[in-house]
Length: 290
Image (cartoon, rainbow, N blue to C red; front, side, top):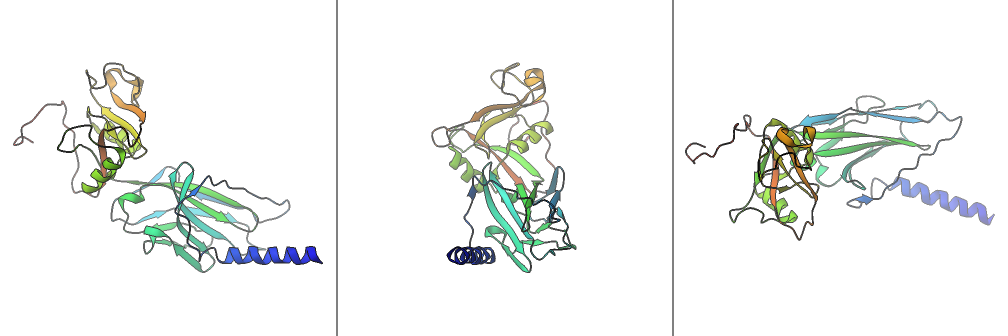
């Protein structure tokens, strides 16, 4: 009898915790989260999640759909017991809650309030509509679908159309810690660029000899035309073809001490009119010529 009452109390507490999931405020980030999948033989409650291959592209101020569909044998269970959850990957082991839905209860979190909602295009659609896209929305998102038996998840990468530009303050180069570089980019209506964005800018022709901070805490710089002392000739640490040499590449200093070392910054901004072209060959120009 005692065991039965204890089991009943545990079941009630579990149900209450499940029901309050949408009402409780989440932690800013969940670290070290490990997903455990439970599968019962003979059950038809399996969940399979499908997301878009590659990435979806938008721009600041735009509206984008992060695609996610799931297959669920719901004949015996129905879709009302399925929980849909979107999180953003902010670190290899950290996630920030974006949106969660359980039956008719929907909730968006943080800066996504008022901007995120389910597309809800029939059964099995977990796609998220994101309006008024911001620079901070750039990154990878996880779509997770959970039923009473198991869960499955897929990743969607949101990329932004925009421009990478190097920045250093008036006082000269190599004056910024990592946090100061973040603030400097924000003051220029931008954010620190990602390594992928810097590499894409290098492919478009960006050549800049000064090393700068990137969003992941690494320090890199792009060289289209290697020369001394800008990338050298055939030096290591290049993300370009052939590892450097006459092909150039993105030189990588690796992850640096973000409070004790100072560099420039590579910033990124979006939704600018026109296109950006990088001058080739490089040559100094006076103000009037620029």
